[in-house]
Image (tube, helix red, strand yellow):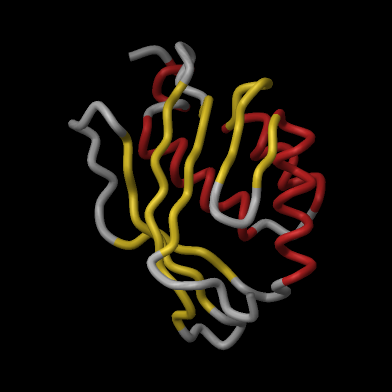
Length: 128
């Protein structure tokens, strides 16, 4: 496996994706975005929709402003043997209390970067 392929294997990409949501330093977050998302990538969930790295960066920063101190974490394994890459996550309050859970489904481009992500929630977002 080439070093680029190793950097963009699904588990590494998903772990960087979660790290993006939790990274509050704008420069560090953008570095993660550039290493994780394709230039023309798209993100969609019931509340948010963005396109391109700049849009994804702005969306993530906006989420962090709306929900300061909240963090995401993966729950369960990332199934690496399925055609559709789905994984589960949960959102934690600043005190670590689980607030909501969901599942995302993604597609990678030929280089292994995220091309598209569609998120779903198991229950409504707090305060929505």
